[in-house]
Length: 252
Image (tube, rainbow, N blue to C red; front, side, top):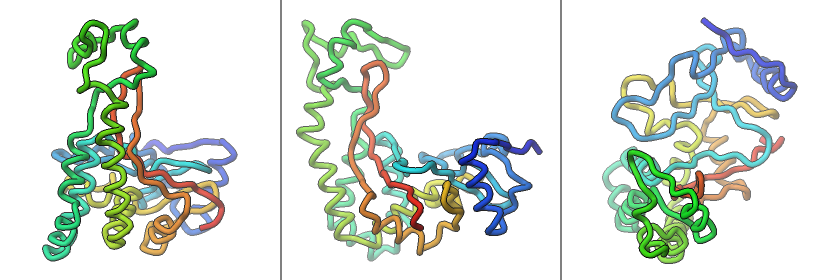
């Protein structure tokens, strides 16, 4: 097997943390070298970056990191998978509190849109591919409403973000499991084919830890944790995402 090797000082420091806790760093492989892929039929983000023997490890840098940043379909599936992990009575409670509408809102987030500040850039470049053509997004040089990111954010996106925040604040059991999913991929990466995509441990410049309930609670209660609706852009064209951000520090 091909081993993953790096001499970057931060990586060396992180690997020492792992070795000090008994991790099998001598059997270190990148996820790519190990052939890890998303299980067929699933829509999610696999979390494993490296393997130390049988331990599947998510690697995070110092400072602000993204636990999740996914477009609508993937984000909706994340919420749906977490919901499906609960018994029927709790699922009914979640549905009555608005979870069904949140999932529908995530599912319908725009995949292709343009922020006002990028309109001229898109008009000048006129990007087009087999799947989309920005020329059809304008009428007489004016952006059509269905492609207007700022309009969507002001009328739908901000409301959806507030609905998600309110739901998570009032349903701590769901929040705990959602953050567990964001850290591990445990609920979306169980398609029965290659569950190595789900991380069991986390490695940072400060520590190597099992992602257990204690660690999940630490992340849930950390003031740096943020869940928000955002957008990522390429060549001026934006896709809406749900992001979960967290700051890695030396306190664990």
